[in-house]
Length: 560
Image (tube, rainbow, N blue to C red; front, side):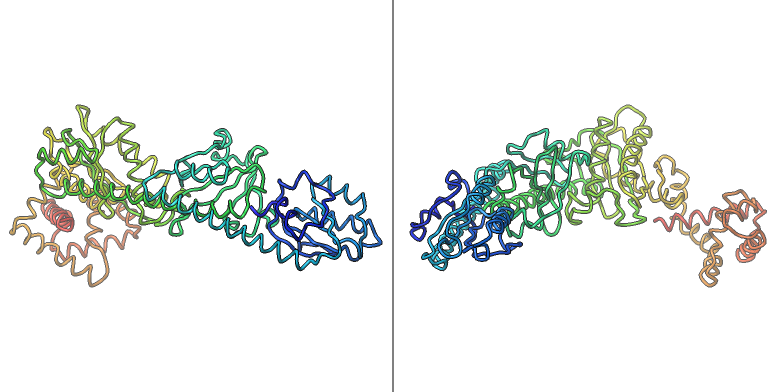
């Protein structure tokens, strides 16, 4: 803010001075610093400065004195005082006219008044003013922090901020959503938030436009439809939470006091976002644990459990299809969307799981169905509301919506899905999860990643699983495949996989060789090794069935 020129000229040390130009500006202009300057001015004078000069070097050259005054004007000084009677007797009229045209106040000080006395008194006045400003800014800081501590929202924070700085302000979050607005034109805000480069011009920072406040380094200046505005990031633990926007009438409104208050407002906003994130993280954690217990524990669905679910926003009385997904990161950290970069990786709001959850919720809304979702490491567990529609069609439509958005949003990510059958009765959360998990594991083992497997399509695999639990059959599998396993381990080959591909192509050597990227003779050598080690013939149907059955049972044991 500084000290008004009106208060400066009323100091006792200025009693004999005369105001030559700018009497009508005394209560409009303020002084933030004082210095003694002679020609050349260069960049030694700051904005809102009180400049003292003897005019030495300009005593016989009115034009040079005029240039000196013009340099003072260009520097943004508020007040220029000449000590007359030695080098300058009278300030030329043409110099006074230049000062008047450019709103520079000029004072005539008798030579007998010492600059040292003026400097001492004015600096003392400025220091007292700064102490008052600091105390006022500290009071504002307490008021802003109390808004957070007393569970007030961003509206109260922005209202308090506007009350003290009288500059329109707004707060937007990291997703560019408007959270609060205090007198910023809505059309102006919409243009700014649209990031339309044709209408928004960013101005490079310039030290001459501001005071020396450290907040300057973070401030971004924009011209939006010929109007000036500023943007300050709201940081928390090195991550950006949002932005504080302010729209002063001109740059002169950004005084030291205003910058101090803005700094305190940024702290209050950051604390609010921390608190908001903590609350939502706690809610998400409660919901995650609740659904995870439903899925992985054989819990009886009682009236008490249904009531607890209702408090969390869930309705357990409806039928649900369980879908279990495995998330595979082919290229971690390669998100396309910039909005992930500024979010703390530990925050539920900014983590990748949060965005997956968001798309699951959105897909449920698109299909007008409730969803219950939780995460367990790289696994997502979803309960999708069922009805009389074919459940396979419903599940596929639901997953299409999710994948369509997420594959566009994230690169290097792949989903595999297991889908349980639709239960006729309710409360089958545990058994549905077991079905979906089994389908997922069988699908990945059989088809690899990126596929969808319905539990109803795994009947043969589940039949083989039941057979594999019999001790006598397990012994036959071991005797049949042990030579192949030992050979693969010793020679670093993969005869079992070779047989699986060979069997997939129904014994077609050419197709198998292409699929394995092998020469035909190399494949025939491998097939002979398989026959030799197992003592089974690949052209005998019984032997071929025994080998295929053994391999499939062995693969299912790996799943278990």
